[in-house]
Image (cartoon, rainbow, N blue to C red):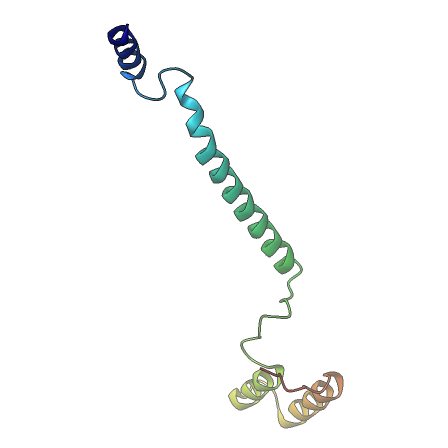
Length: 104
């Protein structure tokens, strides 16, 4: 009797642990996580595009040049004269809120 139980046990496990049921189900867990990561990436890209779609930069992005330095560069290149430079500089300084120093 013990030999027949041993033989039956060996025969049942000879093909591996997946022989008794559908072996393809173990693929569902990695596929699920790949899908979750892909969806997070798609939503992140869409959110980023939505922020930049208006042509404005979000608050955490610093502009590469300030308006005053751009105006000074145009004046130095001779694209605008002194009167226009001073007029535009006065408008810029009156319309921009004062900067507060950042903490941290």
